[in-house]
Structures are given as C-alpha cells and as structure tokens.
Length: 274
Image 1 (cartoon, one colour):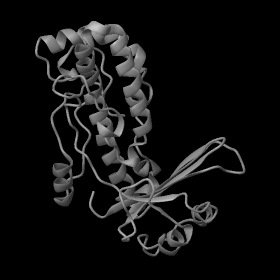
Image 2 (cartoon, helix red, strand yellow):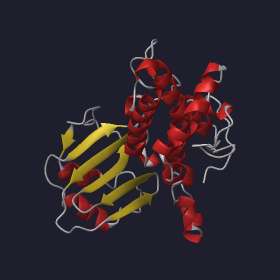
Image 3 (cartoon, one colour):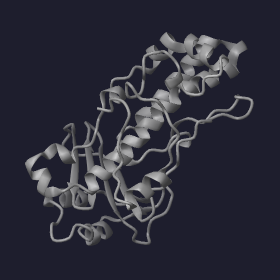
Image 4 (cartoon, helix red, strand yellow):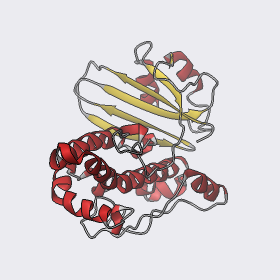
C-alpha cells in the first residue's frame, strides 16, 4: 500500500518472558512479541526515503527514535515502546515498504509440477498476524497431499493442495487489511468506552486449524470436486477451513483501497469471520 512502511526487528532478550502486545495509536500502530529467546517488534510508519524491499536494508535505532512520533500528532508513543527501540542492538532493524499482492487462485506451473508456497503464493499484511503460520500450513498440506496421492498422482495432489489452501489464505489476507484499518483509523473517543473497537481479529477458524488432519479427511472429496469442475473449495460440501458460511468471490486490494477513499470501510462478509 503506497506510503506505508514497516520497521521489523528480531533480537535476543536478556529477560526471558513470553508476551505479545498490539500498540495502537492515531493513524499508526506497532506490534511487539517476546518469547523465551527472541524479541520481535514492528512499527508502521510513513515513507522516509531509507526504505527498500530487502531483508538486508537495516537502519539504526537513532533514526527510528528521531522520527517515531512524526505520525502521532499531539499524542506521543508510550515511553515503554521507545525504551524497547532504544534497547535494540545495531543492524537488526529492517526498514521495508508494505507492498500488497492480490489473491491469485493459481499457484502452479501449467503442468502442476512446480508450486508456489508461503509469501510467494499469498503475501500477508503484518496486521494479519498469520504469515508464518500459513506458510507452515502450506508445507504440511502439500506434503500430506503428495503422501496420499503417491508418485503416480503428483499433478492431482498439487492441484488438490491449491484448492485446499487458496480460499483460506485469501480470507486471512483480507483479515490483515481489516486489522490494519481497525488499528490505524480507530475513533479513540469510542475506543475509550469500548476497547474492543481497536482490537484486531484473531478468528478461531484461522488459529484453530489442523492442516494435516483436514487434508486427510477431505482429500478425496476435493479430488472429486476438481474432476467435476469445481473452481473453489467453497463450491464443495465439506467442512470449511475458512469463515463458516462464506462463499468466495474474487476481490483485489485496488477495489478495497478505492472503497476506503470513498468512505466505505472494509466489511468481512458473508459468513462468520470471528
């Protein structure tokens, strides 16, 4: 999304406690995660000129601290977040632009012998909170499909993998856009009354999924669906791995952004997205 960038940092803490937090502020937000041996933080910010689409494009904490309050108006970031930035080791902060990729139903070569997985198939906004998990689900699903299909059905297994995964990841992508809007454009007078207005969605259908079991339970039905001409998994009568009640319709970020500029907020529907 034009003009929107993300600082991303991973490092090892001295005090090893697990904790995850969203920090929402007018027109921006930050995410922090501390594990037993790792701290991760990310901060959304405006274009500065030092960003680049590379995992090697590092900047120093001094540049972050000098500009961290630029987008927040009269309400500055909490000191605890600034202290976290100030503790960050040198050459660990990556400054990269947020570039959106639209959902793409086809992840394979024409012969279905090559398949995209992870971000190459479905890039996520950081606010989705599920990019790494979806990449691991891809790996589990394609491995399960290949094991079930065997050496004589590789192409069928690959196509089945894509049908199992596409709608689910497209829905998770849309949740990322919804969460970003929620945290960046919250009405803080209303949030003070009801904090849930600025809480990102972490839906059960996304975070309670078992991709291996789902593949084994539904592989044959998906194969039958592909052979009968089904285009999406929502065309099949199997338990959903996406929002229950949802029927997939193609969408793209250009339309989402156009609606936003027209004052129409992104709505997650139909189906149960929570």
